[in-house]
Figure 1 (spheres, rainbow, N blue to C red):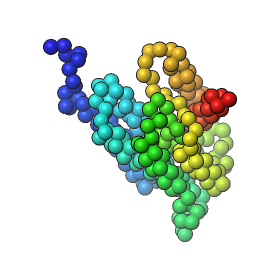
Figure 2: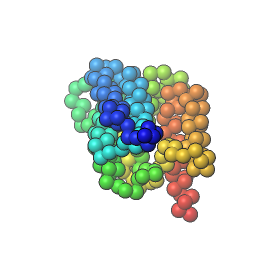
Figure 3: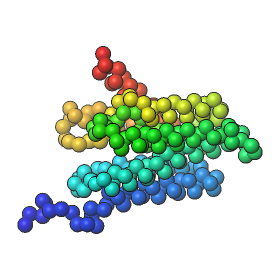
Figure 4: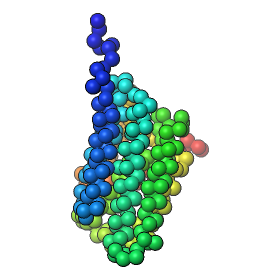
Length: 242
């Protein structure tokens, strides 16, 4: 019997779901860190979650074990890590500005990001147009931008803390990201499905560019990567419409 054509064992077949659960666990730990005033830990937990979120789909395709259960589990995990966590981060940053007393009217808008992340994930699950790319900003990208603010504040080489810790800045970020999450703007996916250069050159070049930004700017580079991703997607969209 040709083993290369055989189905993976039941244990191996659950590997993508295990990775998805690691994503969820990282989200839970991130929430605990926020509650314990360890906001500086959140970006690293989110990065691990984003890595395994990318890996679970890759592994599922490689093993050919994609399933409706995996799809639903992925969205549930993403809702915690890339929905609840970014809202809580913005909430904590606003609370650091306003203090802890009677601030709910000023800090509650942070959770618009959580609400629109939920809408984004629900739309994605039922939208058959998003197989090779995305319509609207993916929740991991939105969350990476939010946690980049924490990285910048933790090691502010460029004097941006004053501008970040302004209510107007945080409200604007919340509103803009919320809009982008449910927009109809096409965003390219970083999935590499073949070895064909022509099909993957945008993804490969963007990864190289992203690594250069990280090496040059550190935490600020994370935010610049997300901004570049949005701008490149918008430019591609406009060019394709012309």
